[in-house]
Amino acid sequence: MAEECNHHCEGCSVEGCSSRIEKLKPHALSHIGKIIAVCSGKGGVGKSMVTSLLAVSLKNQGKKVAILDADVTGPSIPQAFGFKGYVAQGSEEGIYPAITKEGIAMMSANLLVDDPSTPIIWRGALLSSFVGQLFTDVIYGDIDVLLIDMPPGTGDVPLTIFQQINMDGVIMVSSPQDLVSLIVEKAVNMAKMMDIPLLGLVENMSYITCPHCEEKIYPFGKGKSAEVAKKYGIKLLDELPIKEEVRMLVDEGKIEEYQGDMLKNTVEAILSL
Image 1 (cartoon, rainbow, N blue to C red):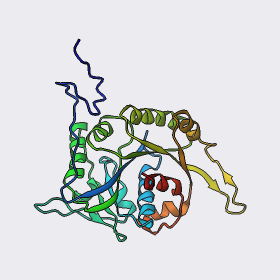
Image 2 (image 1 turned 45 degrees about the vertical axis):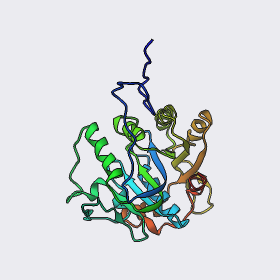
Image 3 (image 1 turned 120 degrees about the vertical axis):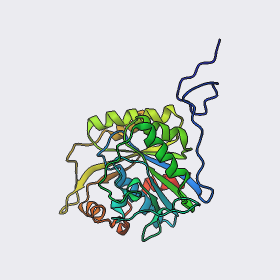
Image 4 (image 1 turned 90 degrees about the vertical axis):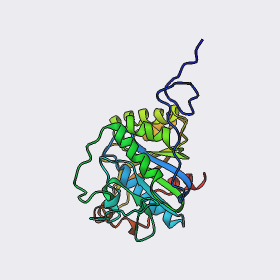
């Protein structure tokens, strides 16, 4: 009986499988310690904000960090770090990433166009190929952690990225709403089906701290992320409050001024790999 392919194709050995995808290697001048994907089941939960905060937090721990903004149709990482009107440069060797004031390397689709407001209207295969090039053609240099800000959802592009790049771990970002938690379960299942280590969940917009008594107020109700984490045997790493000062840092492109420890457990999970 002929061997059948289940089309997850992670290390697939079935001859003739059309879904087999070879693993990509980083640029010869890039030396990457760990690759961590930051994912969400849907957009609008603050995945890019968490990626930015995580990069800054790791940098504050003395780590060399880079960010690959794989959310090509909705890139927002450059905005958080104050890159407006910046266009990345390159040579025959490859593409040079933007370097932030504090030394974080980053590459995004918005750094390769003259006008960041120009929409990138491509189909999935072209988007996936482009993200692959951001991994293989960009000279990130010697870094300890590469954070990949993934496209939201479980569609063709994130699937291909997971197949193409060897991930050391995945951080899943959610928000407290019931519907979001249901979608997160799909994303968690996707990671598990592809045998990618899931480090845990981060619940964003979890609560507000009363400025007078410091009591935690849950405007959306207590989130379901803890239940999802328990169901799948993973950790709820951190619950992030709604903080106006953090939003302002992102909007003003000054996220590197953040000095807090809201992602303490997530940072420890990455450093323990």
